[in-house]
Amino acid sequence: MPLDVAALRTAFPSLTSGIAHFDGPGGTQTPAVVGEAIVRTLTGPLSNRGTSVLSEQRAEESVAAFRGAMADLLGADPRGIVHGRSATQLTFDVARTMAKGWGPGDEVVVTELDHDCNVRPWIIAAESVGATVRWLRLDPTTAELDLSTLDVISERTRVVAVTGASNLLGTRPPVAAIAERAHAAGALVHVDGVHLTAHAAVDVAALGADLYVCSPYKFFGPHGAALAASPDLLETLRPDKLLPSSDAVPERFELGTLPYEQLAGASAAVDFIADLVPEGPSRRERLVAAHSLVHQHESGLRARVESGLANLGDRVVLHSRAADRTPTLFMTFPGRDARRVAAALADRDVLAPAGTFYAYETFRTLGLDVDCGLRVGVAPYTDDADVDRLLDGLAHALSSPTLG
Image (cartoon, rainbow, N blue to C red; front, side, top):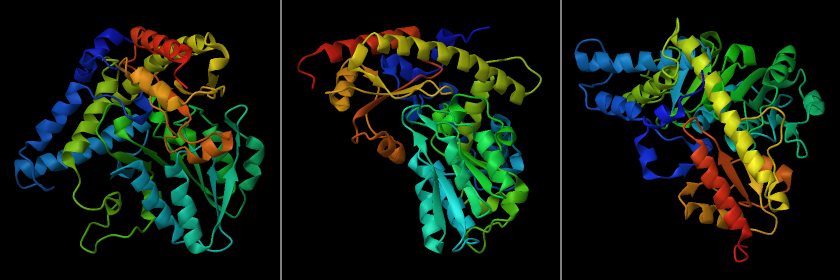
């Protein structure tokens, strides 16, 4: 059965604004049930975690539900789910903690395809202890990682940090193959799954990810993040923490009081996705089936956008051209300022922002000026009418002689 997009859209109060949202890679719109879960939890009764009265029990329940929901979403162990303020914060924390065991002669591997949150924390951590940084290179002609550079992974490698999917180009690199190479060398693999999780069914074990981070606000939830890892691996890591705080896994990585209302919102977002397929033996299996429906819908719309862009000829250069990619398209306009094109679209209530989107190394490799490109992201609630408005708006903007 196809995804019922018309029914899906009714769950999002914000879509009544009339805005055609192509900004999903930066954060999706939020269904009413997620907001209601946040309010219901926050307005209580709610106290700090405990077991004595209902308000304490509700805090405990929100934490357990979050770990269970994220584990089902990612095919992970709920005992290894860590909440964080953001994927950037979690990655910095993990990198700093792992670097305590590194020194001169050790190496970390990062890529030119990644968001800077999966690059800079590892570079900073390596430099702080005298370790060396190696690079998996991006081929700008294919928008793919150059796998001939995999030989940078060696017995000296301690961690390979790679994206599950580029938030700029949509490219999905062969993470499992990279992880196999890394594990053969004795290295750990840290996967930035922020963009991938919104568009695909994730199985962290199948990916070969020892550590995997994602952000619920990319898939209908509130702002925040989760890290998935095996409890045994987390037991080997000793993060900086307050003396009285719990040393149990995963609590030892969660600094301060948890935002119980955000946890409840994230759990509700996972349930919302699962409910796209209301029948199934388990939430995990419904989530996998739901992502199959989403992929079919988003891929069809991506093809429509790409066809429309092709009709605009050499006025558009599409940089998203990897064989395996999400429905995220990055484009530039020779001789025109992408920010002005984005503003022209915004005048029509079509939101497709311009920028680098923190893909700093990718921009450098592509040889592009900062803020010279436009990113279009398709989400499950995007429909054909949205695509029509986007393509009409781009055609109008690029035919204007005054829009330089």
